[in-house]
Amino acid sequence: MKLTMPEGFGRALAAGGSNPASRRGRRNGVGRLVARLWRKSSVAGLAAYALALGGVLGLASADWATSGGYPFGGVQVGDWTAWPRAGAANADPYTRAVNARRGEIPLAVGEGLLLTAAADDAGQALDATCTYRIGGGTPPARAWTLTVAGRGPRDPGRAPVREGFTSTEVLRSADGRFTVVLGPEVQPGNWLPSPRASGPVRLALRLYDTPVAASVGSLDRSTVPAVTRLGCAP
Amino acid sequence: MRPVSLRVVYATLVGLVLAGLVHIAAVLAIPVLSEKDAVSRTRTSEGLDHPQSIYAVATGDDPSTPEAWLPIPDPAVAVGVCAYDLADGPMRVSARTGPLSLSLAAHARRGAFYAVTDQAAVRGALDLVILTRAQYDEALADDDENDPSRDVRIVAPDSRGFVVVRVIAGLPSQRPAANAAVQAVSCTTDTPADEAGKDGSGKGSGR
Image 1 (cartoon, helix red, strand yellow):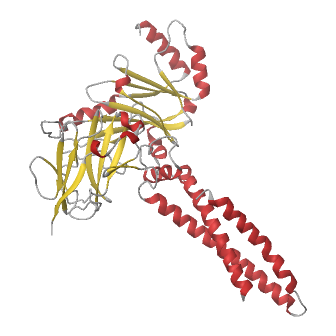
Image 2 (cartoon, one colour; image 1 turned 30 degrees about the horizontal axis):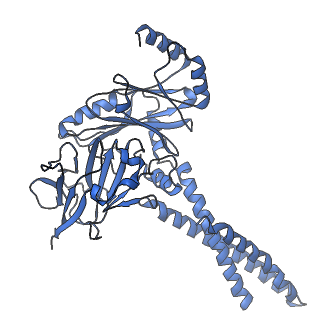
Image 3 (cartoon, helix red, strand yellow; image 1 turned 180 degrees about the vertical axis):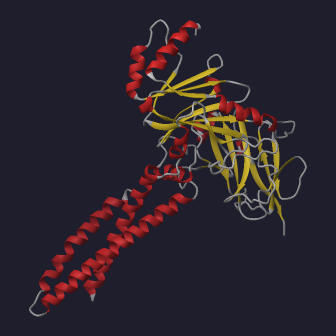
């Protein structure tokens, strides 16, 4: 976007320059005053139109780009998206704007790494009515937490059961790997209740004190848990 | 008819270019003008000598703090902030390591500029001093060559910002301890008079 700006701006200046020159030859006798008046109002109207268009479109697009999650900077790792630069001092301006609007305090590079998942391994968006198996290993980290959240504020009437697992409390199999089942129905083992009755949900995997925060490129699909859909309530 | 429509096209083009400029200006201005961002919200904790808890993990029947403004906090991590204004003097953050993992990160308006975990602690103590370039030079000049300071000195990019303290509670039974560990960190402003006193006491106790 920034690269195209100077070219577009130059074209606009050229357009403004050629506009009055092409109309200079049409000045004649009686219609001169009328023409000039019309032209003046018309130029003023067009200028107002251009300003309004610029202001409304510019502000609306800026609002849209910074109102949700981070628009850039994610690194896709299997079913997860890692956000290594969300808290860095050289984060992109959109990330900084999103953090400022949400009042977020992101994890710094030396502190940890945030990974989020909004879709399962088949690419379908995670839904609160479905049951998912989240299983596998995690990248090396001193501690990690796996949490689930719905969009928007919490349901006030819903009793908080469990929002996530930490690396200390999760039940593991003999080889050190783990399986967490996310769903609305009670499950044996590591059961993570759906945070709400329906609607989209998101998973967050936070790795604390991890060496991979500085080298996200070293992560691949086999080092992060896989999110598999087991079934959906009708 | 044709010049009119051509002028409308020109005006639309100018409008689109303006929209791009307004978009870029707005995105760049949001962090500067925002009153809801973390730096502005933490300003209330400037006078405290311990971190202001902004997310206390839920313990037993106590739900987490209702005034928590972190958008999606980690339910197992207690978070506290100490805001600083370096115009009042350098900021000293001292933490004692415990059984729970603790991390400190220094943030300014542009983002985090330093982070350290308790694994970097020397003899169970983590001392961080955040200062401006001028204060850093002054501290270097004042250093006693025979007794070098153990402080980790970090030059901050702005005079205002905050330090985040995060303590991870791996088990629900560790949650009260995590909330207490956040409060146990001390954040003090070093005034020149203080510093002289502190140096004296530090030497006296053989540090």
